[in-house]
Image 1 (cartoon, rainbow, N blue to C red):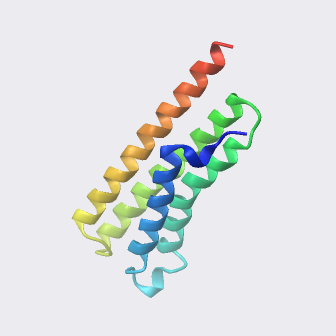
Image 2 (spheres, rainbow, N blue to C red):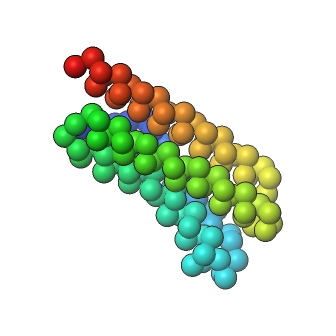
Length: 122
């Protein structure tokens, strides 16, 4: 079992999830079961898929779940675009979150490449 809690990308994903919760608290009440929920679930999925993948016994399976973590990161970007268009967050907030998400995506892709490279050397 991989010590996923030690991965910087996992730690950053948990921070993103917390930050998204703080942001969505400011969204209108009518969005609680719609955009707020979708954005929170997408942010949570990044850390959750990373953790779930770490529980696999093979690097190949772990790598697959890291790929699953990238998808909701892009979903977060779309949700933030929608929120900004609806005036739920500022352009500055959106850019700050984009920077966080872009860093996480780059780290996930790097981890996935590392896992795939290690797998091919076996």
